[in-house]
Length: 435
Ligand code: ASP
Image 1 (cartoon, rainbow, N blue to C red):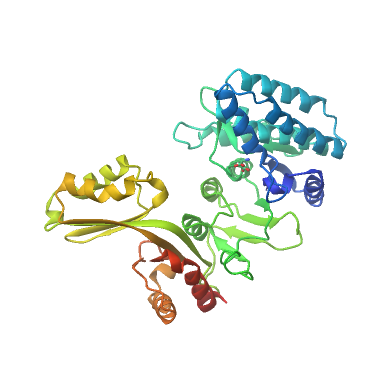
Image 2: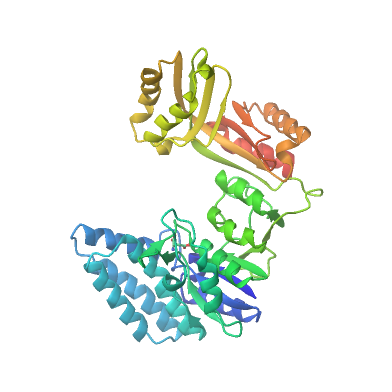
């Protein structure tokens, strides 16, 4: 059995849904499809999920929202009409949703309706059975999946039938609808794939797989043929967002491979994500960079003689909303890197003085303008030859590495550079290591 998930751009209008239908019907093993809400049809368009959030927000402020809601109604009914699907059930569901918004339901409930309506529409079009995620997926308070979910889904599925399953949401133990974070239909696909012990989880999107570098920086970046779960996680941690980072866990536990494919070019191989891969031929998977980081450094003589000082400093940072993504320490100093977006404007300047005051430090400095570059590949983090190659290549192009970290993960090396050199860093590393 193959479980397929199609993203919002793959389902944004009737002609895209027809492509999806022919992909599904071209392989009889494709018997369960997870759908997102209709996404953007072009750059200026708005995703249905965002339109729904907007209606909820208007209703919360007692501002009329029916004009905005009518646009959602129009979007679904015109897709249905173009596909020759009866609109009665969809219109009935839309009326019910508008009524519930008026009554003040939660944002999660409202946002989840994009996936629900699309699943309803697509199940009518394909003639496949509709399953409702709200009845089957239980999401715990901390966002994790209740273990019974896998069994419940497995029990609901007859292997001889075909199903449409809405992505992005489930419900709490109390039965209230709860969504995943944005882009979370990938997680639903992964949960369903694991529940039924799928041979493959296909993740259909609008690009032909995972690229070795961001194509906005390297226009002819190659697509990765095969990549391990761990490599995808490392790439996602530093800005790659082809696949939702939380979607790896369910399939990883069952060692189910994921294939990322392009709905608009189904003949392309795409990228397969596997439990582990033989990296002897291609030791590196990709390079990536994320800008917008701050560096906070503190110094105090005999710092580490004070028991628990590091924990107390980090707790103080947490109360300011700072959750560092990279840090290092030695006898008298600690350094942290964190995204500046974590801190409200104005507070950034005061972090250092606040810490200074509270901990009587010798020095505390908070600077902006850094970028984290990651070189990802099985074994890279311990491959001294490759690591020194990175330094040499960057140095030859006058790119100064202000901090680096390797050896923590076997799979990645992190190089902190100035934000102004972020793109050049990717270009140099791609040309030197991956071309
Ligand atoms: N529709 C949701 C979003 O826009 C979830 C998804 O597409 O995966 O984030």
